[in-house]
Length: 335
Image 1 (tube, rainbow, N blue to C red):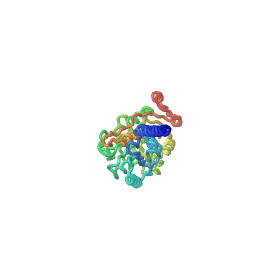
Image 2 (image 1 turned 135 degrees about the vertical axis):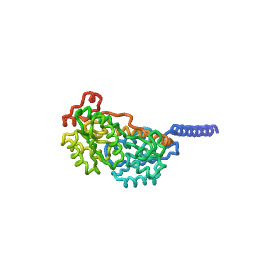
Image 3 (image 1 turned 90 degrees about the horizontal axis):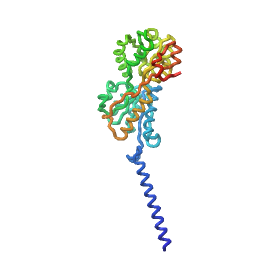
Image 4 (image 1 turned 30 degrees about the vertical axis):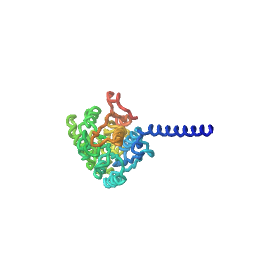
């Protein structure tokens, strides 16, 4: 009889310990992403307007930010990665798919992608990145108070700082080429900014439009014959063919000044610009807030927190361009 009682107490004790351990486990995991809402896996649609290193870096930075916050792909978050191949009809089709799939959040990379998504949904949270002017693009009411289902990070660059670089390196330069696709609203915005910023430096801006990637080489060759330097904005069409721009300009011994680091890595001379992976990471941090309950309407659109001078020493040597020591001391150098 005593043996049966001891066995009953032992079983009861083991059951109590199992319940306690299970309870502790549930308590320890209650703050993990996805657990607080019944363990729902978050669905995030990603659309970028086309494939090139800067936009790819922004996408990777976004995903890294979510991973650092506990959102592990295949466990508590899934990504539907889509590329519009620089076609707005394709972008709309992708946007429609995300809405139909009832994604929890959409990442839109570049202005065209963001506009395509915003045109089809005013309720699904949209986080943008690599969008130059979200206000002029019609995505938000203001940078500080978006007032819509859109927020994120802008890749607006200080064009005055870029022109200052040109003057420091080429003090005798007068004519500056501006290579851009007028079909990209973000590039038109930058052209307007460059027109306002150029006169104080004594520069005459020479815009050169391109209608597509196939036009880039001819347009660059024509432009290089008329200017002392070429500036490439964050134009998706031109940037996707930056190696072509660099080679065509080099044939005329004309340096190419860039708006972001990825262009310098591909042969442009120098920039004081954006690290797109960091910009995407900032957007990812904002997405984490939204997935935790924050309202995009109240989250200010952010710009890049850090601007770095990046110089391609090989390009400088090939062009016979001397970079001032004052710039080299703090610059990131690409050999």
